[in-house]
Image (tube, rainbow, N blue to C red; front, side, top):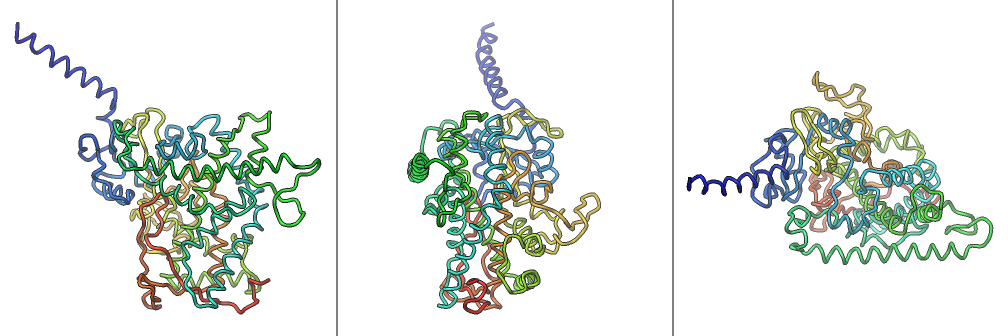
Length: 527
């Protein structure tokens, strides 16, 4: 009798513990395969700074769909087009949210398009962004602005070419992207590149306080102070721009408003005016506040600046390593423009080889190597049950290097995008043929897919082909190595293609080249 009484307490405690664990991890036995986790940190010990590389190595052992626990956050990782399609297309609404981190919540004011929860507000700002801010009509209106910035950059390269001076292409491409985004948003170029880079950097850092519940209020890595410092600088910049525009709008005279621009000609509305118009519209289904406007500005700056600059740099680096591809691309450009003018955005659809270069660059060096989503409801995937609040990682980088889909996956072979037959996993055909980057072909997902497809896709695909083609048309490139010496032509394939662990996976080292002009003075850049 006494023994029975002594057993009651431990059995009750065991029952209580199992009940609590079941409530926290109700489907633990039904999750995909997983490595052994450590207490508290889960599987953090298995991850390197280049997380997509670590996920790829784990997928080779645990399969194309496996589960992890990062601290107290359950996660699943997928690494094949089939699983990407299953989750991002057929279970899109179940994975329609994103995880909020401390940095994301601070910089997006809990109101951004990229990280807002799926719902009426998200649908409204999605329509506003895709139809008003980044729609085809707006992109057309800003075409002359973008082409003016392309020409300005090429003139910088031309002056350096005359002097035989090396150029840091990484920095110059970031300046170009920042100027284009700034002028489209504010009507003028803002000196925002430094703080925008800091924002992107901090958003890409893994903060243990976001994953281990009892560390939530502990700033173990010192990110809290840096987040507040960067946010303070960025918020001051955005607040200054909004306040100046509000003052300008108050002073407007009766009649047609004129916008900041050259001369006395009315200029197309920039983003800030469009957003302020919506904030003043009493009939709007969602009342835009100052916080909403700041959040959208953060989205466009942090996503647009890095994506375009880094993708252009990766493409240029691949072309320098593959001079035969550069030569053929230049021939295509000259066939279209006849060496009489600078290539422009209207030429992009007539440059299939350039388009293939970009697709191959996206395959090997996707702007976002990991597409992340958060599960909003319990979801059944095959024989597995994925509980709500599970974090999903789609390893776009690994999918782009999947040998079951891509022939010679580690080789830069853009001809795969110029062939006519589609990928057929059932019959082993691996030629991609006519495949696009808009989230419908799950072998290539540089901008995501489904409800969370990147809203800036139109801008990126307007800007990238023209910028890359113009650089190819006007210049050859002599690369400067680590020790400041020019790399010989027969050593060009030694250019490092390593990555740096950031949100957008840029090259590890800046691309520094001496541009060699292919035109005479007072030629196409002066017309």
